[in-house]
Length: 326
Image (cartoon, rainbow, N blue to C red; front, side, top):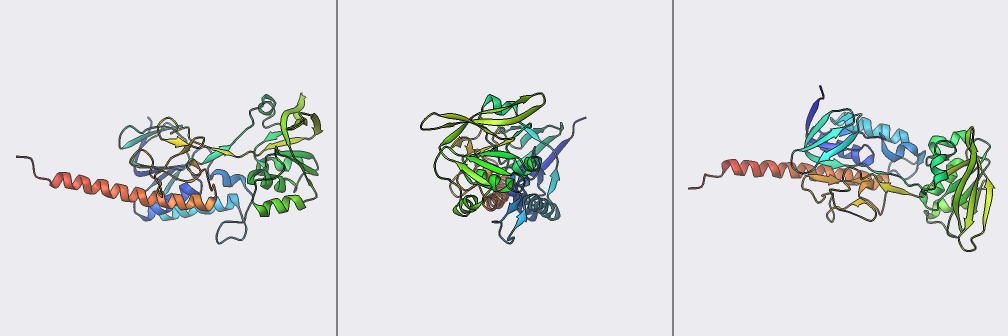
């Protein structure tokens, strides 16, 4: 028989926003329950060196997330390995269904589902996913020791992936449709000084070329954006690093969104268009998308959930205390 769990605050997602919300909600004695989701720890679990987390000159992303989870648990937040598949937002308490069959009932929700890697949408990209095409250098870089590989993109993600992959690959070709990078200046400087990385400006990836038996990548076909000239470049791996999209499947048809699917919150707040539902981290942040800002929003969401629940309690008390109409 499927179980039903009841909590004052249900936190959906387990990145910096979710775990920080867990810490603050637990300290507020709300006994929060956090459901980790499909990727426990979020995007930082696929990142190696993190150099911009306050208090740590350098920390491994997975290690940081292990510490955050431990911190939330130590404060009294219950962390559950499960995946929320749907939520009934039509009334309070909110009812969430999960992959395990458990039903979660909550007076307030904190959504911290984060974002996921974007793909180019090429048929050949789909064909070779997991067989030479990847969106996670830290997951798959090890398999390309001494090989020539490519990274597609020009932002922070692409530059960080390219730099990391030089630990394994003999050469990394960075394919970018423009003639300058959008990444932070310090990352650009590192990339341009790295002898293993060769930028390929004004080009797009048109096709991933490989073998069928066994399935594997042998080359990529790229096109010059101005001249239309195409050519093949031998590579054994293609890493797509063109950014991320918010993981909004639970709410895209219910909550107000903008900027390509990011959840809209009230100014200087994590409140969404539904009272009692709060959104934090990369699900709502299309501008900064940093671990530290996600954590800050997780703090805000927990404090606002606490305030919301307190106000609901006061309203209920006033209704009980109010004299009956004559």
